[in-house]
Structure formats: structure tokens, C-alpha cells
Length: 384
Ligand SMILES: *Cc1c(COP(=O)(O)O)cnc(C)c1O
Image (cartoon, rainbow, N blue to C red):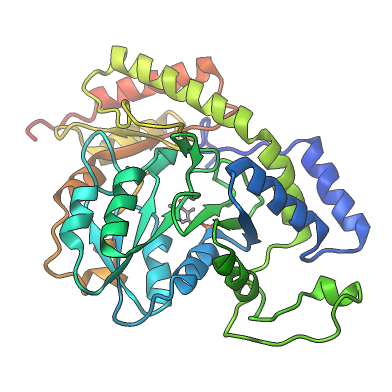
């Protein structure tokens, strides 16, 4: 169906069309100067030392697990309230995801206290996910990691443009993984980026992205290298020049678009507080600068989420759920028979995500909030 207000929406301007056209006319479509420029600009915008553009964030997360030397028998602490790719990446390398709970109704991010409780002698790493672009408690998590000798990997798929204490999210851990999928804050259609501050890690990422080969097609094309070695089992996780050219333009719009997202979030919060005060609004006291990737709300226990979402749909407003917890999926649940994540399960039952994209006008936000008030009034099933 055609939504009056989709959950997310993209804007491709004349600059994107020109950038793609230039690549198509250049005769060089795969990893080359445009990708290099994109990486260079991402390095500057995140203040990181190295960046590698890849096919998607899932590939970035896979490589993050590989360079952390995770493998069979290792445990990796991850949130369950995240996209399934966060935990799948751990399984790609044969390691075991161990799910930690989130902090609470105000903060849907992984709880440092829960991380501490999940540490065993087998724990090797923690993957954090900055929900909606709001920073996890990185100082505390880095402290836990250093106490126990653990690697920290950041799933920063929501967090392009986010920072904490002036340091970009994604730049805190050993690696930070970004997604440029079509519903993210900046998009290359499919695409992603992995950043690191460590030279040795960077060298492995460069090789792993390209079949484990020591020299690239472009070097050979330019006559810089005639042969190559294969030093380990690598992958083809390279982005292409067409997507990289989109990324350069989209990155140049990121600050402005994230500012608009923050204004929309602010307007949502003010009007919802006034019109439907029973609805919970997380991250009100969040630390740092968020990318405001999505706008989550929390329904009280007496409201049927199904009825609420149906009523929103009847008004042409698309809503979603972030997320069905990973430990409840068929591919996971049998391996976690005794798992208890009470906060995750409570939030996952009551969370609804409202439309948020830079093109949303103020009057449209108010119209969506009126739909929320109406949907709320017809979804009360009593009790808790
Ligand atoms: C989108 C997303 C991913 C996966 O990104 P792709 O680029 O589609 O592979 C991983 N983690 C989170 C939290 C995401 O939102």
C-alpha cells in the first residue's frame, strides 16, 4: 500500500544523480579513487584513523569478529534488542552470542550491569549497538572490557553522525560498523563502512575485504603491482564506485539531515507529552549527540499494540517494532532455553516506532501525533 507517512523516506537530489553519472561515464566501476575519497571523508567526519567501505554493515560486523580473532568456544556478549545481524556475525565465525539485557524503560541500550553478570572465563568480546543513534555507556563498557581483557565492537548502524564526549560512536571500540542500507541516516542503497584506530587491524581489514589478497585490482591496472599473494581466507566485501559516489554526497548531507531529525524528535516529544502523556518516551536524558535514526515510543500495558498499529495504518501512518528480540527467533531460541531478559522482553512487547525522516514537515509531525492520540484511544483493552 502507499503510505501517507512511511516509516522512513529517502531523498536523492541532483547531486547524487550527477555523482553516479560521473562514475558510469568514467569507465571505472569497481574499488578505486571514488571509494578512496569516500573512505577519506568518512575518516575525517568520524575522526578515526582508518575506514574501509564495504558491501553492507553485516559484512563489516563479520570482519570485525574475524579481526578480533573470535572463533569456536568463544563467547561474545551482545544485546538481544537489536537487528539480527549483530548476533549472526558472531555465529559466522563459530563463536557463541551471549545475550545481555538492556538498561531500562529510559535507555534501550545494553546494560553495563548485565554485561558484568554475563562474563565467564570464555568471554572474549562485547558488541554494543547504539539504539536509534543514542550512545551506549561507552566509558563504563570500555572500563569493563579493559578489566576483563575483552574486545569491544560497535554496531553503529544507527549512529552515523553520533558522538559521545566529542568522540564519534564507532571510534570507541576496536572496530565500528556502519550501515548505508536504504532506511539508514545516509544511504548508498546497500553499503557499509568499518572503522578502526589500529594499524594492524586496518591491514587485516584491507586484505579480508578483498579475498585475502595483498594487492588490489586497481594497483595492478595502474601497473603498480604485477602479482599478489593470498595471506588468509578472505571475502569479497568490496563496495563499488557507484555506491561510493552516492556515499560521498549523502555524507555531505548528514549533519544537516541529522539536525532535522533532532528537531522532529523534539517536536514529537513536546506534542506527545501534551496530548498523550501516558506514552513512554525513551532517551530523554541521553548523553552525547544522537543521530536520531528512529523515533521509538513505549505503549503502557493496557494498550493493545496490534490494535494501535492497525489504527495507525488505517490513517496511512506506517509504524514498526524495533526489535523482536533475537533470542526469540526460531534460529536462536532452542539454544537459549533458560534465558531471562526481563527488561528486553517487556520493552519489546510495548515498543512502537513512528515515522522519522528529514523530509517530514512540522505540520505532518502534528498530524501523526493526532493519529497517535486517536489510535491510543481505540486500543485500550484494560488491565495491564
Ligand atoms: C541495518 C542494521 C544492520 C545491518 O546493516 P546492513 O547494511 O543491512 O547489513 C546491523 N545492525 C543494525 C542495528 C542495523 O540497524
